[in-house]
Image (tube, rainbow over all chains, first blue to last red; front, side, top):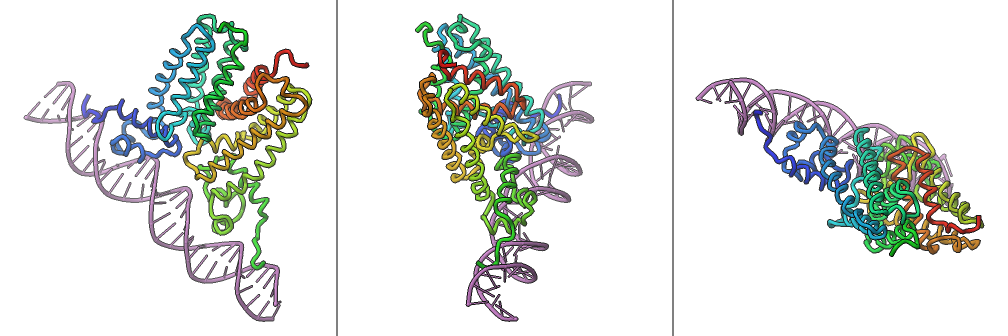
Length: 196
Length: 196
DNA sequence: GTCAAACTTGACAGACCTGTCAAGATTGAA
DNA sequence: TTCAATCTTGACAGGTCTGTCAAGTTTGAC
């Protein structure tokens, strides 16, 4: 390999991800990315082709991390505890940072119109992975028996509701009301007479 | 009054609303609005000041219409029927048009970062109005007794979940899966032993 | 009919962004 | 050490958008 790339790809993607999380995909320009990463705009074009390709590359880090966190959270014998840990993961990820970063997928999904088919497809795929991950988690430890809805429906419900939480986070910027909503969520999804 | 405005303000706002629904607030330019309304860009600046002011003006029509539809939907003696009509309203409003328009509030909320404080505040206010409208609806006809959660929590839950539905609509563009999610929603919110 | 306030129009300067490219610098491999 | 592939850099042309303004037009009131 001749003429080696002079920047650390991982570090660049990490910084790019930060930018996307704070500004959103469509509001981010190549100039923003160049400034944040310290890599010349021309080099970014040369290495990746453009904003969307950078997004897709950076997104993989995000996706892997996120799903891993969800897997760990759900790996518990009690449904209420598992869902509590799940929601806590989701909320923590969207409310950390100052200003809060919000949820990257939700935001990108909402601006679907302004993105390319590839990005749209990746977001759709990721939400499917999230759903599958949740469903698999709920099928462990006999959690399913403690739920009002079957695992698949519960997983879809959780994906949708947490997207709603992400929208409310943007509007309220208030952790407490999100936590309260999460309590309601768990109350309606876990059987009332389930093991304590 | 001298030098009368030469366009029909209502018609202009209706067209502007269409543009905002299709492109989203931040992706809409004054040029888009001028083309869609047939009013010269300079005239729009003169009459309203800018994009955000036009949005806020147009939004009032949208808000009034929407809440009225919700009020009518919830005005029923059976909780399941009322929630079904409610969700149907919400879904119909976001899935009509081709391509589907999506939900204006959800979208604008998601791009909160890129809008002005006034717009953010209006969206927050509108979601509060929606919540209050739903709560008031649920307190009629003894619906509250048929619900798993108290009216206020149910209202908040519905606002949040329907925001999630709006995000999923962008991703899936598939009415059927949204309807399925809505069925789950009603199943978990209405008491199992409630009057049929 | 006159007139001045208010509206309309086309044009302009200034930002910002994109995508590309030629010239220069770097570096692994022969 | 040489060299060619690859990366870096600064610059450029072209595009979109914004906000403003002067000149022209319209119209209600007198």
